[in-house]
Structures are given as C-alpha cells and as structure tokens.
Image (tube, rainbow, N blue to C red; front, side, top):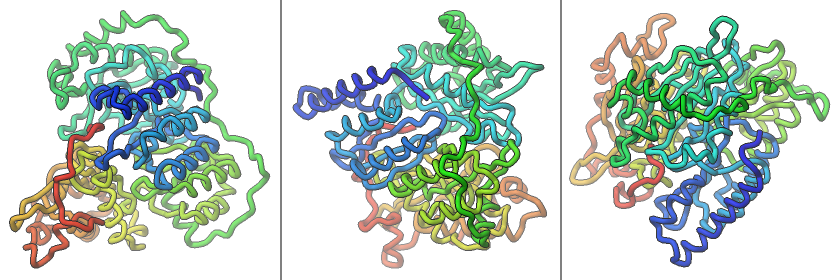
Amino acid sequence: MTYGVEELALQEIDELEANVAQFRSGELSLEEFRPRRTLYGVYGQRQRERYMVRVRVPQGRLTPEQLLTLADIAESFSRGFAHVTTRQDIEYHFVLLEHMPALLRQLAAVDLTTREAGGNIVRNVTCDPLSGVCGDAVFDVTPHADALAGHFLRNPVSQELPRKIKIALSGCPCDHALTWVHDIGAQAAVSGDRRGFRLLVGGGLGALPRGADVLEEFVPEEELVPLCEAIVRAFQRTGDRKRRQRARLKFVLARLGLETFRKLVHEERRQVPAAPDLLDTRAELEEPAPLRTGEPAPAERTPEYHRWRQVCVLPQKQAGFAVAAVALPAGKITAGQLRALADIAREFALRPRTTIYQNIVLRWAREEHLPALHAALARHNLAQPTAETLLDPVACPGAETCASAITNGKALARALISQLEESEYLEDEAARRIQVKISACPNACGQHPVADIGLYGGALHADGRLLPMYHLLVNSNGFGQLLARLPARRAPQAVRALVEDYRSRRLPEERFRPFARRVGLGELRAVIAPLLPPPAFVEDPEAYLDWEATKLFSLEERGEGECAV
C-alpha cells in the first residue's frame, strides 16, 4: 500500500525540519508554526516542549516491517511504548521537537506518514477491521478505503476545510467501524448484481453527538470516491469558519437540513473531475499469506487457551481461518510487544490491523495453529482473554498529556481493570460484553457517548476545594444518557455496582441496553446513590486526587487542546 510519492514525502519532511529550525530561532511565531506542525500530526502537550505525534495507519493495516519501525521509534524518541487510538492510528507522547525530522524519516522508510493526521483536513480513513472476513461480510471494503485514503492525502480540495472530516467504511451489517457517528460513513451494500454502499453523512460525537443521516441508500462502488469528494466540496462551501465549536459537518446538516445538503452535494458532484482510476475494482483482495518458516511448534490446549479462544477468537468467513484479537489495556503497547507481534505475524503468516477499540486483530490465523499462536502471544503478555469486554475499557490519553483534558482517563481505565479483574466477569458472557468507554473531558475522544456505560471527566466544587469527577452515562438505545455525577475515585465502584445490578435482575438472554431501557434511569441511579455525595476533605483526602495523581486536583495546568474533537 502506497500513499503518495516517496520523494515528495521526503521533501515535506525537509520543509518541516526547516520550519522547526525557524521556530526555535524565533523566525516563526507559535501562531505561524502551529498549523504547519499539526498538519503532520504533531501536537503540543500540557508539558512544555514535549509533543504528541500521531501516525496515520490507513485501514489499520500494519506489516511486520512497520511494526518493527514503530517499536524502534517508541524506544528512540518516546517512552518505550505507543498507543493505539480510536481512529486506528498510532500515537507517541513526550517527543522532543528536534527529534521530529528523524522520526518522520524512519516512518517514511516503511511507507508510513503523519501527514494529515491533524488539522482541518480529511483525517485517517478508518475501516472495519473484520472487512471481508466477518461471517456476515457483504464484501471486503478495504480497497475502497484504500482508494479514499490515497485520493484525499495531499489533495488540494481538502487542505483548508472549516474543520476536520472523518470517514469510516464498514463491510457488514454489524458496523464494526461505527459509520453512523462519522462525518461520512459508508456501509457495504448490494443492489442486484452491483456492489456499492449505503452512504451516511453528518454524524459525530463530541459534546453534542449526532447520528448520521442517510444521504443515499445505494451508491455504486465506482461512485464512492467522487461522491465523497463532492461532500467535502459542499462542506468547504457551507461550513462555519467563524465559530470553531460549530464548524463540524454535523452542524451543517442540522442547519441546512438533509434535502438542501443533498442538492449541494449533487451540484458539486457535477464539478468533480472525471477520474476513472480512483478505484481499481480489480484490486487484489486480501488472501492468506504463505507460511515462510514452516509449521509452528505444537502447543498444549490449556484452560487459559480455551478461555482466550472463547473470548478473543472469531471464525472467519473463509473455512479453516480465524481472527484473533489482541487486547491492549487502554491502547498501550510496548516496544517489546510491537517487536513480538512482528515476529508472530511472520511466523504464523498473519495480517495485523489496529481497531477503533484500541486493540489489534490478527487476521488469517490457521485454525490448527491457534494453540501455538496463543502460547506465542502469552509469552509477551498479549493473550489476555479480555478484548472488547468489560475488562477492556476504551480511554483517551487524558490529563497525563492532553491540554484540554480535565481528568486522567487512562488512569481510570487501569483502576477499573484492577477492580473488575475477576474470572466471574469472563465466565458471564453477557456481563463481559458490556462496553465501557472513558473520555477525560466532554470532547468524546474516548467515544463515551456510544458505550454501554460511558464516563467523561469534569470538576466538582466540594468542601471549598475542587474535586475530580465523572459524568456517568448509561446507554439504552443509541447515545448514552446522563445517569449521575460522582467523584472520580468512586467511578470504578459505580461501574461495578451497575454491572452487579444487571447480573442480578436481568431477564434470560437480556443484554445490558435492553435491561437499562426496561428498568429506567431512576432505578439505576438508586443503585449508585450512596456513591454520589462527595466526602469532606478530612474524611477522605484521596477523593480530592485524581487516579494515579500525587497532588491535589487542580485545573491550573489545563489549557486549550490543539486536537479537541
């Protein structure tokens, strides 16, 4: 997969290196330099002179060579680990500005870039990680996502938008890509003997989440790229450039209405230049790779293996193959684990992809190799039987690094895992499938509005002081509804109480969302009512510290984040 001309990418890095030198010498002001670096996914942190770097991973696909390079970068330029994001990207934190050019050149050598991982442009195109292999797959949408990624990268039409555009594609009705909360969502569909997409527009999360509208019930596959460009062009014309908080495409749809916006899109479609090669419908679909190192050594089928297989392994549509999910707690993966995954992918002929749940899936695992694969993963602590379960919460970086964060979302995720880490939750399938998502502020970088149980950070005045708190949301149908506000230190107890209440009162075969809808917010609020009042400082001084914090909670370090949703 290639996105852009290598020589051009190297020229861009040279330009950024010159910009860094100009900024450090004072020739460029912060206001002049900021948009130049954010275009390359380089964002300021709340720590002075430390930066976050976001690497675009189109469709989440990574090769063993790329995994090795990502490991080298984690050790050379960051803190020895990386994070998988909810956009299938890779992020590093605490990077020095002078290291950026060398870091970007290492990425370019394995066909990875940070270009347009930030800024008011079309961001990384995300794709259903099970596309083409899920049992309900309509068809593999990877080539279509690939075409969109290549089309918009460096495209003049998308370089100065009113705000960012996020695009997602799903290959089956399960919608593993959450297309319905994206600016543009495309769901695989078939009409007669033609392949195409159900095209959605105007979805989004943030402080004011909105479900997408159906722009077209069916778009032939060859029309997907030009129609997406028409949507971007229409947004270019109609987006609010004066009010940043109202600039996303979802606000355009709310203001103009679907019919008016549809007409604008059709007008723009007539202006899109003909480009018959935007999508090569003959593009080779992903197939199993041949084994290069011979058959893996057999391994014992232990109880741990059976538990892992039950939770983390999904049979593929193709007979004899399976997808194995690798759970990464709060999206964290160490350099050593990245190298181990590269070796494992080579040995077992696997195709890794990152997911929007901050994990990695390994596609095309041969059924007969699963015990050996489990053993190989377990040697590097990559075989936890928790992927996409209650014990695998999604969380944004939070106040550890993000300037706009209020609380430490990843610290809460770790506390939650610690308090819930009991086998009973893994044995109870319905309980373990409860999704918890955490954001450190209302911006929803942790996707809290679409979780079964969502939390987002805030601050509360109590006993003459500030106390870290979370808004706790429960989802009964669509977006979560506010259940309560409670001290951050009591959030894990509240989640556990809700889960236990669900386990004790659910009907046979009743999942969490129907349960929440049946019993109602009032009854659920009563379950956690004892946890809601903030304690006096003398009674519980730890309540006035955030998770993993060593000093009293304060908002003094909080500022305006550069990558707020």
